[in-house]
Amino acid sequence: MSRSADRSAQGAALSRAVWDVLATQGLERLTVRSVAAAAGCTTGLVMHRFPNRRALLLHARQLLHEVTLARVEALEAAAPTIRAALRAILLQGMSIDEQNRQEAVVWLGFLASAISDDELIAEHRRNNHSWRARVERLTAAAAPDWAPARVSSVALALIAMAEGAAALGAADPAAFPATQQVEMLDAALIAFGLF
Image 1 (tube, rainbow, N blue to C red):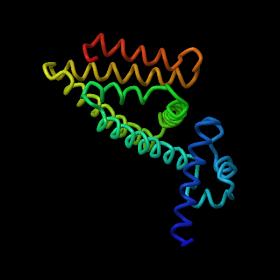
Image 2 (tube, rainbow, N blue to C red):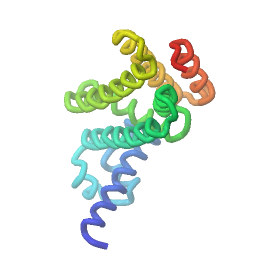
Image 3 (spheres, rainbow, N blue to C red):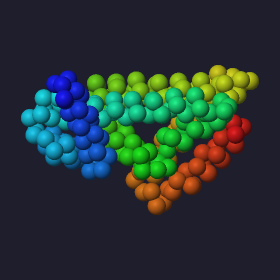
Image 4 (tube, rainbow, N blue to C red):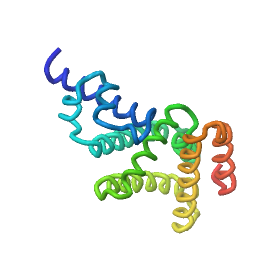
């Protein structure tokens, strides 16, 4: 194997380890040592790529953005209608399966750390602004007669509902099962005349 391929494989293994530790062990246990253990490598190798916990968190958030962006773009492209696309992308952001639940845990862990860190909160805001713009664009396309203020308000309400369900479902899946989350989303879309 070439040196660059080996480096790429190491990077992918470290990325998986960062994600796995944060998603399964929580924010408190995300350390260089725990990532090294999860990746089966030395702490020195981890520190070469991620010199501190902050770098681990930033990487986890960037991975989350990349993964969800690719999925959202695929869902939007495959949807038969604009309204179906809006529903699909909101649904994928809720805690309706293990992957989404883990993503919600990563998102919450990052947000908890980002509040007091200017660089981390800037990354969070940049990604959230992109998410909001997508939901607003799809909402506007699904309801072309609406005024921009209504589009913005409804999109924000849908985002808040989906992200709230993701957080609650991640923390207590038994109390917020996937079926109820789907029903809640559909009820909101019906109430807004978008389903």
